[in-house]
Length: 215
Ligand SMILES: N[C@@H](CCC(=O)N[C@@H](CS)C(=O)NCC(=O)O)C(=O)O
Image (cartoon, rainbow, N blue to C red; front, top):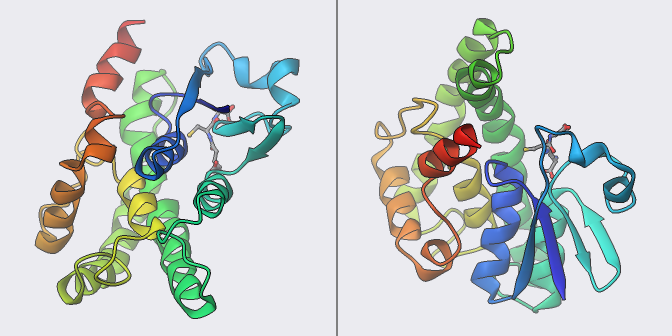
């Protein structure tokens, strides 16, 4: 049986859960208490020597790094979300990298400094917020253009790139990152969030944040 080790508020962990869900894979969800530093405990370092979530244990096969986990799960199911055809796959990889490197790398510091740093009483890096938002202004329009020309990020078919970008953007509202200025992106998000793979495994990010703050 597959076990996913994660935390409710971790974007990369959400990514793995949503991927398992859309693939119809049953899994055990093992909550790792990041606030108490459970991710650095010896038992967890045997699963992920980096000491971060997510990680999986699939009948003794352990893997970390959310994108690698999602790709492994897709391949295991022979899923069209991540096809074997080299050109189709390369194009999906291109958008996964774009989502991770250009969107994610700028989105995450904004979320961290607007949401998690204040919550944990950590110093807020205003420059990281300003810089992140400035870069996002540069990088979101290509996604918007892509979604103007296609139903999903890569083509008319949903792919792993959609799941990865969708997961990354989960905390947008809570971090006051206005995505409504991108109408195609907004419509794409709300269409995906209505689908069973999403509703069956996921609560609103804000609700999870409240639950976590009260624990
Ligand atoms: N590149 C990694 C990022 C993993 C990561 O940064 N996880 C965070 C939670 S979102 C974590 O475990 N932080 C706890 C720590 O660093 O101690 C992935 O995509 O899996």
